[in-house]
Amino acid sequence: MAQKKRLQEEVEEILQAAEELDPRLAPLAALRDQLPPGPEVDSPSQALKAAADLEAAMRRLQEEARRRRAEAEAKRAEANRLRAHLEELARRRQELQGLTRRAQALVAWTSPEEVQALTGVAAARIEALEAEMREVAVRLQELEADEGVRRLRQEEAAQKAQEEAQKAAAQKAAEARALLRQQKVAEAIRYLRRAIRQAGEETPQALTLGLEEAMAAARRQAGNALFRAREALAGGDPAKAMQEVGTVASLLRYLPAAERRPLHGIFCRAAASLAEGRPLVLVRGRRTPQGWTAAPGTLAIGTPCKGGVQVLFNLGTPWKEGSLVREEAANTAPLRAQTK
Image 1 (tube, rainbow, N blue to C red):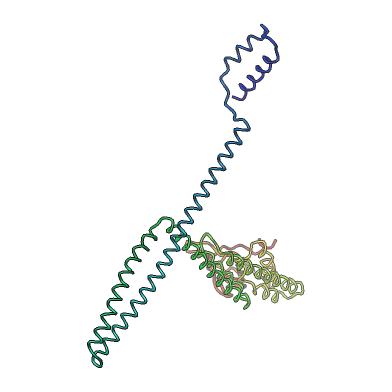
Image 2 (tube, rainbow, N blue to C red):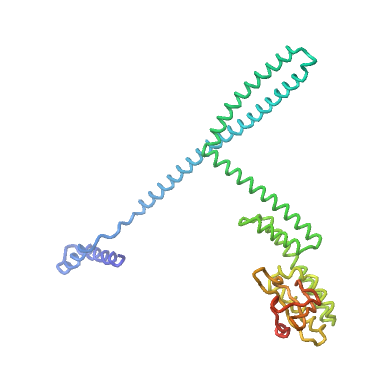
């Protein structure tokens, strides 16, 4: 289509340049007549007019939406007033009913005629109140059935739910900070992660910020432990290095692999120094249908024995020192393959 259009424009230019039809240009004129008409292109003025029409239509829609919302808000305000009035009528009826019961309790000590007169007046007032309550209830039901009012009520409910969720999230974030002040960083991270999972897709900002704060604390603790462990290992004290790394064992599952790898390295080097030449095996958790046998990021070091591996050093796994880890419960590899 574009090629035909360009050809047509070239023919038009040639024909317009000639003051009168040259016989040699007759084939071009015939070709021009045979070309199909090209698509109509709006002029700039037409395009501007169309855009202006769209803007005008949008303004009309916005004005209509504002008008309908204002009407719905007026009806909602009336419904709120009627509901408050209905509650006031119910309160007054309850007071009159209580007065009637108290008067009847005094009938043995007072004039029965006076009691009857008083209860009769109270009954008449109660009847009038109930009639007014029925009228108010009918009007209130009509207002609440309005489509615009229903939409506003839905907005109110959604906003209230969001406010309650934010309030609960702020409370949970405060509780997590209390755990951080107690140096319970792993507990704070677990608490916040569980709260985020429970929050669903729209995670409140308070929980996100709280988790960031807890992760920053975990990184600081891990960095400090790594520094002290390196110093101890360089000073010829592998037991001290092992102890320093062990202080952050509960945080390893939450740290990125690149940040926990140096801690793993110190742990393995310290274990090799303390093993006194015994063959060592690195033990990691294995994923099963029931879950991980040991959390990712945690590990243990042991020596091969009959039936599996006897744990010598533990870094966050459920396998304590001296326990036996069966081969089907973990992934194992020679330690030398991990330290080269």
